Length: 376
Image (cartoon, rainbow, N blue to C red; front, side, top):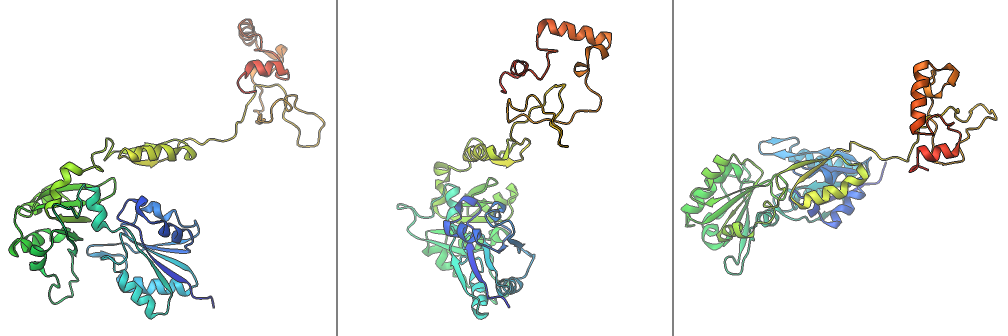
């Protein structure tokens, strides 16, 4: 029986793959199994070894590929196989990521585990939209609130009156479907209807969209714009700073998908430059660079593979020249002059007047250097 493995609960960050921590990268590099969420950028999976098992347990509202209890059992089972398991979760594992429940299950099963915190979308997504969650003149406090409570609860555990009056900036996660109810409850409990509010969809990614308004009209604005989850909602005076501080979605190529067809070894530099300008580069190499191969219009034959003493006269000229098997029927210019048709002899004679090397034997180094002056 193999020794028990170990599980790392790793925060992948809010969407931009560059926001994963160095500790998270190190965990992925040593993973034998990666159990990942729907919102994890696929490029992060490439950081794991090619032979590592990759298991999607992605969850969307009202659509779970695996119930949470089954995910917990999966982590325990993979660890008991003796594997190093990375549970890759969007944002931070312990900020509305149900990482606490998974850690409880692992502890109960006696499975060793570690937690690698991640950059939470509660801070990163507003920042990418140009909204600081705190500001010396506007906001001395902020709260992160779930917009989608456990439906099995008898009653809400959110103190709406305290949130409405006692916290400067409110950040709601997973609240897209309940946006109208959230705004209504805040206004009912004393928050001003004209409070600046912003809703950000797919934050920190090239698909980021932001709708700004107030508590009074934000639900209608979002519905009109057609924004659907995942979204982050920011309520507070700091949301009014967006027009002044936006930096991510106003770059010159933002929202553009650009196909990069350069060779794989060269595409990375161009893709990085495009991404810095806001584009979403899609790499699809259409060419491949290999060591140089020359094909010669030559009457000589390739070196024999049967032990014959015949040797290609050009073999010593350049080690980069490779012989290619010729067709059974030689080309007209490779046939003896006596075997050529009258038209072929005339064409070759005209070409010889302008190019002395046209009919010169390919076995001559001078002929080769004249034909391919940049290749020898």
